Length: 113
Length: 119
Image 1: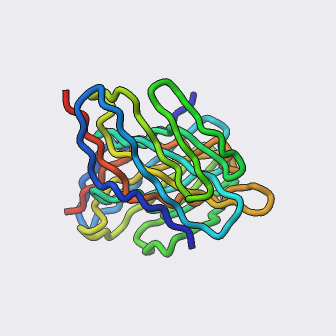
Image 2: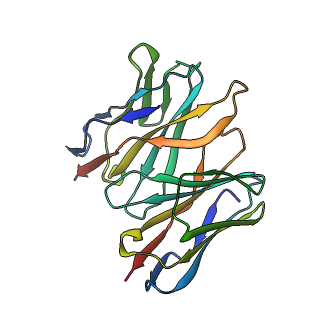
């Protein structure tokens, strides 16, 4: 299995809702990442997990809460989002050294209404 | 701080033309990785190539080729005999590493080049 699977593919949520994005990989990668991509822009790093521990938080607002329950699973919990948080959320994984590149999922297209 | 510049915002070609996507990077580190990714309309980022800073060999993979020139801090990507399926956004990216060669885990992307190949 050489894939990163993200669910759901599309999500519409209100500003008072709580929702979660899920990311799963079974390649044995010990680093997992969340990126945010606005339309016509490059992806921007949000969080990095190494060995299930948060190693990088790129000053992301607390309404985004990441969680890594095990080495294969990465969640992003969403609460009280704003319309400007609407974007494509990409999950990625890699060997810790990043020597063989980063494998990305197909993303969750989030719309906040 | 590191930076990746893709000066071409959009490129439009007709099928079977060759096309080169430019990428220029800036970093003070001597050890780093460079990447190219393809993003079709479906949204997934598809890995195309990785090159480390000590390997300046050019690479060819089918219709794709890459030219890495450390002297000019460039890592250009050429598609030979382009096809409609090559239409996508292409990103060049840079990842820094520590002295042990381990990636810090942060990819810095260029702004991307939108390639449209017309039949």
